[in-house]
Amino acid sequence: MKKTIFSQLESSALFAGLDANSIEKHLSMIQYSVKKVPAKTIFLSENEPLCEMVLVIEGHVSAGMSTVKGKHLMVDYLKPGTMLAPAFVYSDNCEMPVEVKTIEESVLLCISKDDFSLLIGYCEHIRTNFIHILSHINFFLMNKIRMVYMNSIKEKIATFLLRKAASTHCDSIPLRLSRRQLADVFGIQKSSLIRTLNELEHDNLIFVREKEIVILDVHGLQEILKG
Image (cartoon, rainbow, N blue to C red; front, side, top):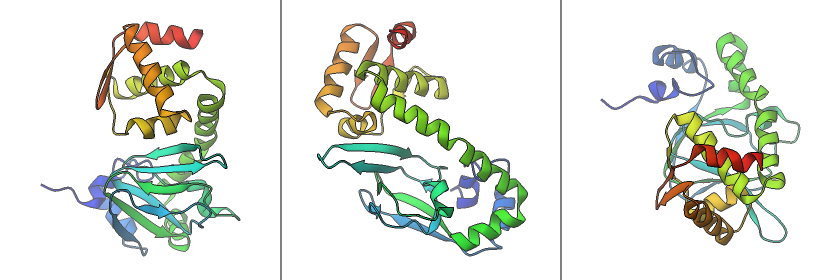
């Protein structure tokens, strides 16, 4: 049986703790839209204002920025259940500093600022979830800054793999991103990524497949971070 959007939203941070019927009831009180966006489509351009709350229901979406030297950095990778830049919804300057682009065909829940205000105004549970999401933004940004600007390439990759393994409880890490997109996540060149992956594989720390990286030596990756 195909899931409804309401049952899909059960696993999102914004609607965590609510069942599909409750989510449908709350959303019926406001105006919202569900948009299907084709793969590799720019949903928002850099410096375009974000005037609505956007949540990914299906698919995967990237948020990236380019430097004056043409270097691209993937700031965030949005999977199903993730909100797009939640802090920007109520910012005085809501112009997006990043380009938002679908990696694959995606389905997005879109709610205007006014309707979202109504939603979190009368539903304490959703309001608490939203505050919880906002409280984690600084943590995310500090980790991103550390990964991009402070760590070596090996440390960046080791950190990425260990976090993925910890969150999935599995040593096999599926790769939805291309090598270029993964390099953008780390803020490095594709050639540097491939070279470092080869070095880690040569050291028997990982095994690299086309769409998967298998961790062979967790302790060895942890030692890189102690470096």
